[in-house]
Length: 187
Image (cartoon, one colour):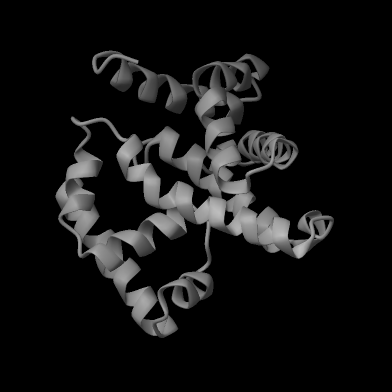
């Protein structure tokens, strides 16, 4: 997507969410057309299984349809709202061990290593001209890693605390302070 097309797409997503709130089925199709690929990519990166990713995207779209009336276009971006719903759905799937229980311990360890690797490598996937990449670079390395593990890898604060061998409070502080710095940097 070109830089000129990005603001138009963001506006279209907000309008489509508002269309869902009015019960327009075509609006939900528009969301899928605009963001379906990204939604699936994020879900697969977080869950590392196509079947779970498909389930997460479907569940997220159902939630978008049902909760569209709660969306406030002036208060947040449609894309951010949409991806927050998907991220929360993916985290719920990861926390629900029943779907992962069919995997043996080695497969679960590989899944966790894959999530960790995807989170750390995600910064490299951002383009050179992306403001988020520049802002992430200003953070302390451990805070940056904690944020990436939480928001890209889908790890809980407790898991990040264990991975980084720091107290839970320290981990939460890094994430909270880092997010505040990112907000200021991006505004």
